[in-house]
Amino acid sequence: MKVIAHARVRALASGIGLVFASWSTAADGAPFELVWSAPAGCPSHDEIMEATRARLGESPTGATPELFVEGTVTESSEGFSVKLAMNDASGRRIGQRQVRVESHACKDIEHSTSLVLAMMIAVARPRTEAPATPNDHVEPPASGAAPPGRDLVRRPPAPPPSRPPAPAASGPGRRPRRVLIGAAGVASRGVLPTTAGGFAVRALYSPRSIMLFGLEASAETSGSVRAGVGEVGFAVFGASTFVGVPVLETSRFELVPTLGVRLALIHTTPRGFQAVHHQVRPTILAGPGVLVRVEVARSLFVEALPQIEGIFIREGVRIRQDDKLYPVHVPSTLEGRLSVGVAYEFR
Image (cartoon, rainbow, N blue to C red):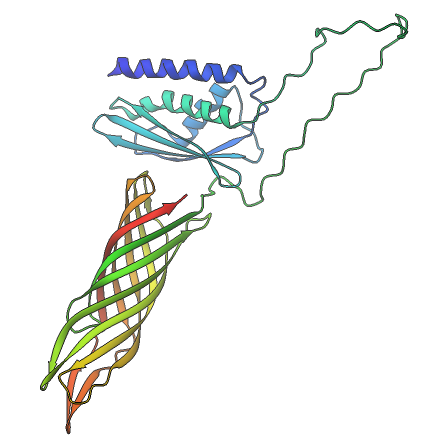
């Protein structure tokens, strides 16, 4: 396996050598920053940055970064995999590479990772033409030109085109925008008299920060409850909003604690009574949850969101038949809820 890994490294070295040969000056390239996530025992952020700068022939600079790279290391039975994703100053994705190292020592990823990262940075930078040197060929003066011995007046070289300034909000921790749309099956217990089931549609948005914002609409029904000579059916329709902050992120897995609030309408349907009156009762629920997301294919995720919600409006349901009043149901103080589904990320 080490022979295979060494062969891959040699191939990458040849490729990056060709890339560097097409650039006249590497030291004037756009500065870059790295967001690094790796298990214990792997090279640190500073080690990867130092190794990459060494391959580019550069030294640390205080200039504002214009290229941002997200590096994530994952371990498997065959070795280690490094996912490198590069964005420009506007947050647009401009490159992505996967580096696989067949070794059981994570420190061995430094060589290949810095090599591929340097190649990505070199390719992403704009090309610059080499300035003219005093030894360049000069055409002889035409007839009637100034006699020898008189100094020739040379035009100063044209200034290079100015580079647009980077947005003020750019920085090392900047994250790309994310938009996800999903659908899920829902099961809950607490608002309705029996375990309820239904579906939900959900939209999630993450700006260029660590925060996550979500909107959800749902509909659920439960079994009927006997009351006198008839029965009462139940359904609940809700709309909710929530916020979350990721506490664990890898290349394919995310764990996001959430806090949300939901406005719901409990709809009752009496059956078997002489006079039928459909009733709608509003209620408000709020509480924490944990969003678990796993990427199963490019841009496609499986999601699970368990929640515990407090019920703040608990108006009871009663049915009157003739002169008798039947108590049917009073919502609990807490509701347990679980939704499981899929989501697609628009990139």
